[in-house]
Amino acid sequence: MSVGAIQRENNGRLSKRLKHFFMLVVWRVQQIAAIATLFITAMTLTLQLSGNLDIGIENPYIRTLATFAFLAVIILTLGYLWDKKAKMWVEQGEVVVERNPYMMYHMTAKEIVFNLTMWIPLWEKMNLDSRARVMEDWTKKAMEVDMKVKPRCDELIASFHQEQFIREKYPWYGGWEMCVIHDWQYAGNTEIVKKYSYGERRARKGVYKCLKCGKTKLGMYDNGRP
Image 1 (spheres, rainbow, N blue to C red):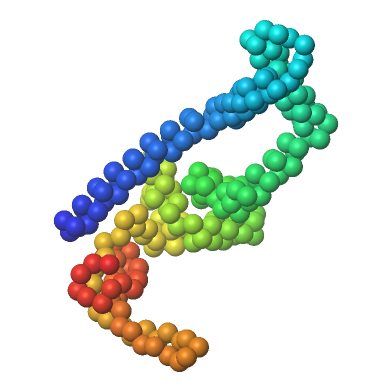
Image 2: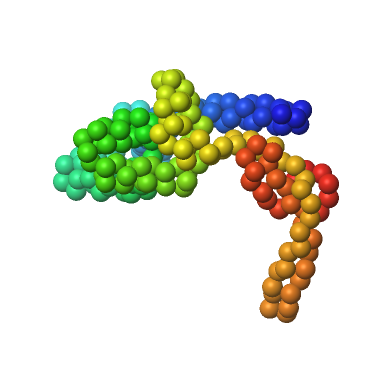
């Protein structure tokens, strides 16, 4: 691996750690966001209404507390109706499942490894070859659609010492090399033709190829890196 590739890989790992820490902070804030929002909203409405409502209480502190308690009862009542009567959590769960691709059609690394090491061999042993082939094709398609799951599958397979079994039983699995960070190398130029309403426009672009996985992409027209 070249020095530039090593530096980019180290920068990628640092970026991943920073993003992980940032999302951890966001998650911690989100855990109390709903309660904090209700409390702040109730306090804001209390401060705005307590001075304008005549509820027969002269003491401003008691009047503020009474207004806050009244708003809290309203909020809790609406929450009860939302839960027990409208049962909106049912539709909320359905929407959460529909909007999560890993709940609908994508496979996680754990599911892929389970299929390859347990379910497919088990069905073959039970003479359910057609079902095993369907599961194998589905698993292969899932990895093609979401190839960033491949390195995580490799980690799980290595932790169970199943590398040789996987590569002997599924030749297509070992043929995939997924690059988390590509090592791009300039590989020449190509001519691009763009069509517009007023005619065609030609441009020359540099072609870059990854030394690790062979993926290509277009970059700038020079001998540097994209």
